[in-house]
Image 1 (cartoon, one colour):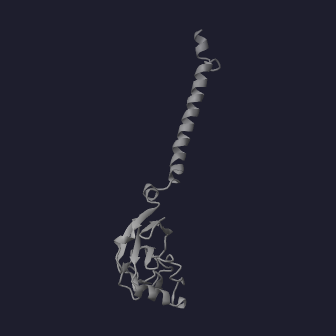
Image 2 (cartoon, one colour):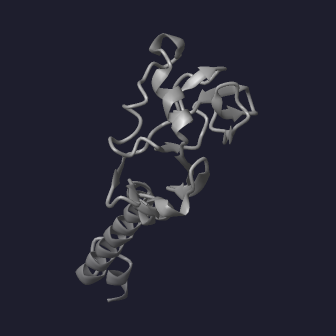
Image 3 (spheres, helix red, strand yellow):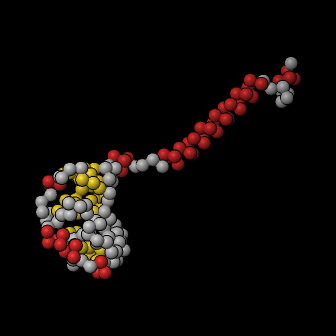
Amino acid sequence: MAADQGDPNNQDPNRRDFIHIAAGAAAVGAGAMVVWPLINSMNPAADTLALSTIEFDLSKVQEGQQVVIKWQGKPVFIRYRTPREVEEARSTPLGALKDPETDAARVKASHEQYLVVIGSCTHLGCVPTFGAGDFGGWFCPCHGSHYDTSGRIRKGPAPINLVVPTYEYVSDTRVKIG
């Protein structure tokens, strides 16, 4: 019998099955560990998921004032424009704009006094400041882009206007962004 124990052709079939099952389970576990980060990276980030929409009370903004709120990790400018600013934006000829867009296309009907734009320069993403530009709107001090009172690019390296996010009015004094 001692000679049978050293014979490689005479192994216990239960032991061989266990080794195959254990190796298969280890391969499945290793495959899952490799694939899981890829699948998990396709989920939306927690900070953007939580702020996919946001509501803001416009009664907090006075005429001529701007409020900056954070939505999806980006600043959003909500500006209550004066009648003079609205008229300047409306009367600007489209030929004077780098990225031609009417003021009416950038605001909602019957709420023309409120402008909602993402407060990120379309050149390299800096945050422009209001009132320092040549056209009564925003100025990006990083590279010199000038925007008008409708957030349209008028001068400088920015290629397009400040982005208007998707938004709607849920009442006369509340706006829902996103």
